[in-house]
Amino acid sequence: MPSDSTIGRLRWLGTRRRFLNLTLTGGAFAAIAPFLLSARSPSKKLNLGFIGVGGQGAVNLEAGSSENVAALCDVNETVLASAARKYPHARRYVDYRKMFEDSARLDGVVISTPDHTHALAVMLALKRKLHVYCETPLAHSVWEARMIAQAYERARVATQMGNQFHSCENYRRVVELIWHGVIGPVREAHVWVSHTFGWRPAAGGGTDGDTGIQKPPAEGEPPPKELHWDLWLGPAPERPFHSAYYPSPNWQRWWDFGGGTLAALGGQWLDLVCWALKLNQPRTISAYGPPPNEDLAPASMSANYFFGVRSDMPSLKVSWHQGLNKPPILQKGKIPSWENGVLFVGDEGMLLADADKYILLPEENFRGFKPPQPSIPGPKSHFAEWIEACKEGKPTGCNFDYASTLTEIIQLANVAYRVGKMLQWDPVNLRATNCPNAESLIINNFRKGWELPL
Image (cartoon, rainbow, N blue to C red; front, side, top):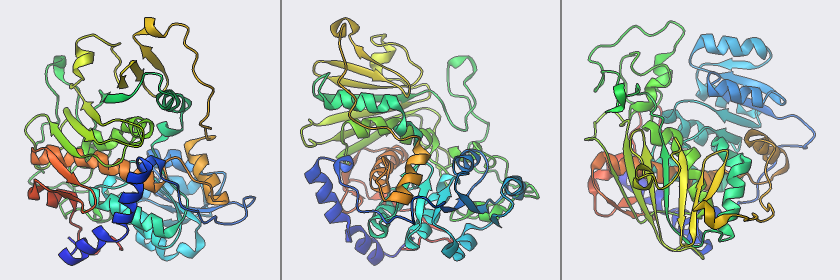
C-alpha cells in the first residue's frame, strides 16, 4: 500500500481542482475533455499493442485489425499462439511490462485483461503517452480510478473504456429525452440486471446457486502448462493456482480479482443513468444483500446512491439491483417485467430502457408523442470512435475522465456492501468520513513489483 504521505499528496494533487470543476459544470459528464494529442497523420495506420487476446480481447483484436497489430500479449501461450497465427508480424509477449519496455514502437494499447490488472497496464500506457482502450471496469478500486483520472489529465491522449452500450443508438435517444424534460425532473432511477457472474443459476429460483466454494481453496492445483500463473496474478496477493479462479468467469466473483456482477456490468448499465442525469460523486452509498463474504462477491445484492443537485437537475436516488433482487416497482407489476432495465422516474412520467429499446410510461399518457430530433451524434462503433480520436484528437464518449468517475461510483457500492454500513462520502479526500474501516477497501494493496507507477 502507498505511504500515508503519498496517499495524502495524491489525493490532493489535481483532485480538488477536478472536483470543483465538475461541481461547477454540473457533473463529470458535463466537463470538457482536454485537448488530445493525435498520434500521426489520420491517413496512416496506428501501431497497436493488445494486452489480453482471448475472449473479449479477441473481439477487440478483430475490431483493431484495420490498423497495424504491432504487439500481442497474453499470459496463456496457447491463446497467444492462436492470435499470432493471424498476425505473424506482431511481437509476442507474456508479460505486458516487457511490452511497455518496447513502447517506442507503439501508438496505443488495448487492454482486455481481468479487472485486477487494468490499472497497472493503463498507468504504464499513460505515463508513456500512449492512447488507451481499456475494458470495463476501468479500475479495481476507487483509488486506482482516481489515479488514472489524474494521469489521464496529464497525458492528454485518446482514451476509451469498453462499455460498448454507450455507443448504441438507443442510449443516445434516451439521454435526449431526459435532457428535453419529457418526463419532467428525475428524482429517482433504478437499474437491474439478472445475470450473476461466476455463479450458477438458482435451483427452482428460490435462492442463489453457487459453486460450492465459499473461501479460497486450502490446496492448489497444477496450473495448465500453457498458463503463466504468476503473471496472471499480477498485483493480486500470491496464492496457488486453482480452477476456482481461472478461467473466466470464475475470477469475477473473487474480490482479489474482480468485483462481481456490479463491477462486470455496472459500466454498461449504470452508464445510462450517469450520462443522462449528469452524475458527479454521490453523497452517500449503501448496499445490502446476504452477509458479506470476505473473499467472494455476492450473486444477488442491491445498492442505493444519493446525489446532490447537479446543474439544472434535482437531488437524486439511484438504486442498483442484481441477480434475484429487483426494484419494488417491478416486483409489484407496475412496470413491464424486463429481465434487465433502467427506469427513470420523473415528476411527469417514467422512462424504461435497455440497450435496444425504451418506452414512456404510463403509455396512455404518451400516445402520439413525437421524440425530439436526434442531437447526439453516434460513432461508427465504440472501438472505431477511439481509433478516430487517436488519429484526429477528437474526444470520445467514455474517455477516462468520464470513465473514472463512473468506475468510482461502481466500486463505492462494493465497498459499502463489504463494510455493511452507509458511507458518507468525501470525494476530495477519497474518504468515508463515518467509516475508517472502509480505507483498506478504497485503497488496495499491491504485490511487490506490481505497484502503480504514479
